[in-house]
Image (cartoon, helix red, strand yellow):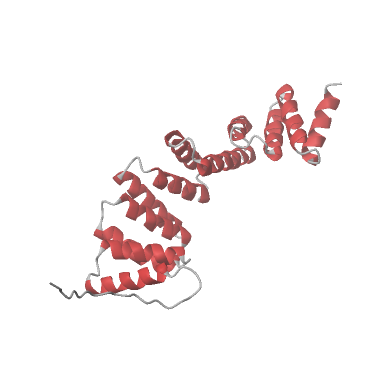
Length: 232
């Protein structure tokens, strides 16, 4: 007994080009989907992601807005919209989206990190420092948050020193050293603040640390020489 079997073999042929063509295909599929379902969350979110990764933040924003409208309770959609807005230099709008994401999900660390970054960009250093500290409490291994916190505390110290609040400036500099221990300029800034407060015994080790880190850093060398001369 013999039987004939028939089957179908489908081959997908794609044009050969350099690089990964998946984003192009993905974009084409999502645009086709939006022709039928303009409010589709996945299609809008994916298109926003494709355009953002391509560097077209302005083009990505409307798609993330539609995705966020389709899923108003999605903290991820709000956060990605915020990221697109930041990339398009629309910082106040971005901050509102990150705030919204945290209202939807108070434990969403990525949104908290992004909000802290926007606050730092806007000069709200105290709020930014608080947010970065919270991110580190949630994720101690978050290296970007640790690095950014050190930068924000350093800038906050400079801000306070310029306004004449030297005691608080010294505190911020000392806190920043926990994240920037090998920064000769930061050690020198702390030493200068301590010297202005008349705390020369505390200032001298900071200048010594700065010179040890960078033997050619002239501000630290001059300050150290002045303190040493004073104690003779």
